[in-house]
Image (cartoon, rainbow, N blue to C red; front, side):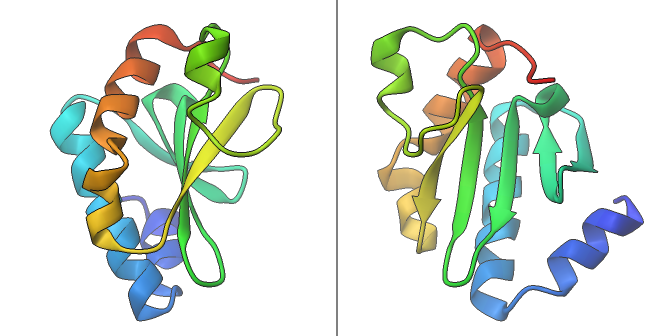
Amino acid sequence: MDEKIKQYIEKQKPKERQLIEEARKLIYETIPECDEFFQWGVLCYSKGKIYIAAMKDRIHVGFSIIGLSKEEVKIFEGSGKTARHIKIFSVNQLEEKNIAEYVEMVNKKAGIPS
């Protein structure tokens, strides 16, 4: 694991650290060959198409929306022009909100944000 990634995870509060670790695990289970790097102040995957960001009381799992249909973009929260997110407050929400399905979709269909 990259030192910046390790430091980012370690500095989070226990709840957010657990959410990040579970989200990372889910991403690697869904895309075993994906890359992981630290950019834009967050953890990035799949050449930047997917990210994990720690917030005050939750994490955001973010996705590139470049190349997705309007219906697919509506799945996500936010108003970004190139990326949107889903708020995760508990480990159970990673499964409840179909995060693995979105990781797979974005990995296959979305473009890489610049």
